[in-house]
View 1 (tube, one colour):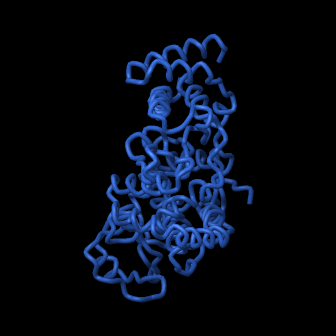
View 2: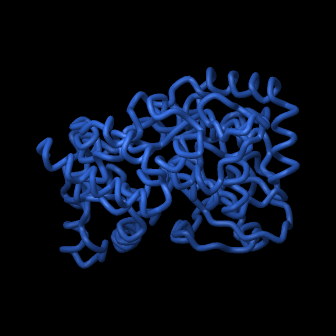
Length: 378
């Protein structure tokens, strides 16, 4: 984008912000300093060459250092976290787990200028409407005095502070928990933790239950049940599912879904309503399991009884695209081929596996890929 085009775009954004109630001084002053960041566009366009495996994802995020530091912070902020739990219903070890996943406990917030990043993305056609809304929200945050514009740093996409709130989430859910008159998610741990609790509460966090748990499945288990369907816990019990130590599941009046992120070779999890709440923060099953498992470990639980295998294939976007096209060509509907593993693709894999006498877990194992003629490079 040329400098002239960016300046014209910033003028439109300034008018949009003022129409939304941002003061003229803030809108004009901040946007005058906002720079076009080519690096932000590169990061927005960049697709990872290889998707990570569950083992790699989990082991990088739930490691001994992060668990031990989380336990230290749970003790250090015990009074604060108890206050957040009383007000929002979210237990402290979950709040610390989110903190750990988002910024490694506040050690890295991102170094990008949020106004410049958001102005760059708002002036780009790909997601202009969304990022224009985020920019206006960021200007409102500056307008209210939460932070000076030159100190408003975050991720390339505009996520900010200890818990990496986007500006619209900040406006709606951030609170002043330390009583200094500002909602400061960069420098105030009380504000950050209470804000995270309120955000999770708003999405329906159920304080009576955990996120989910690792379970063991019986031999010859029907893995087609791991398709997202929610069944009563008593039904999973009848199907022979036990906890990770082989004990009978309790008869709690709650529904659960089965998640097998590494297919039948890896761990299995029964996940409850709070799992969906975690995914309201980040729409990744890997992320939601990592948050839940890290929270468990911080609270003193042991590691997984069935750790994920580390030798499973990591597929590039092009390989996933080829997989989808191949499945579609063979009559297994994976939906529109987009290079992203989703529910439709997993369902198509299950159909292929079932017809070939394989365990129908919907996982693109090396055996499945070989049977479909897809090279993995492994």
